[in-house]
Image (cartoon, rainbow, N blue to C red; front, side, top):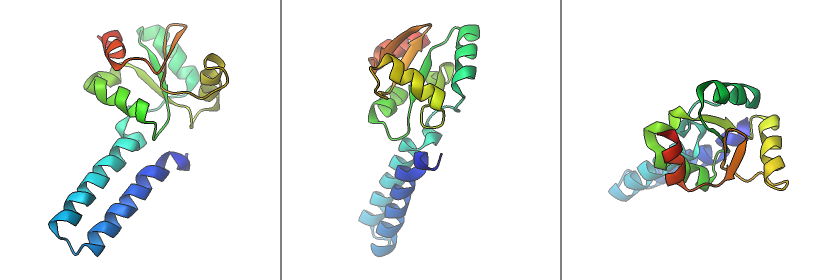
Amino acid sequence: MWRTWILGAAMVVVASVVLLTGAFDVTSVVTSVLLLAMAWVVSPLFFPHHVDDATARRDAVARGVPVVYWRPGCTFCIRLRATVRSRARRAIWVDIWRDPAAAARVREVNGGNETVPTVFVGDVSHTNPDPRWFRDRLG
């Protein structure tokens, strides 16, 4: 669980150092704000609430929605999440670093690699899909 926060925490530390060593000049404030915004985007806070793999599979069938397997810090996951904006909450998001069963499912369909984002629509997987395609699946 702690590794999901490493990149974001590092950015917060760097933003703090920049702000404190820059004596609050305009450049250090702007840089710190940008670093803090990036820390939020790479953190788990940017993504909808995580559920475990078993719950995700069950809920996806019941609600008829896609399941997205992702991990913090993945630029492709961030791009997919940012593209769908508020529609992201319609899908079910599973952090593979928090659920070994989810990581195993991703490895199963990606030749042993934990390639994310991997989106399941029913039993069909789509690895690193086009964000526009995913947005269309969400309605």
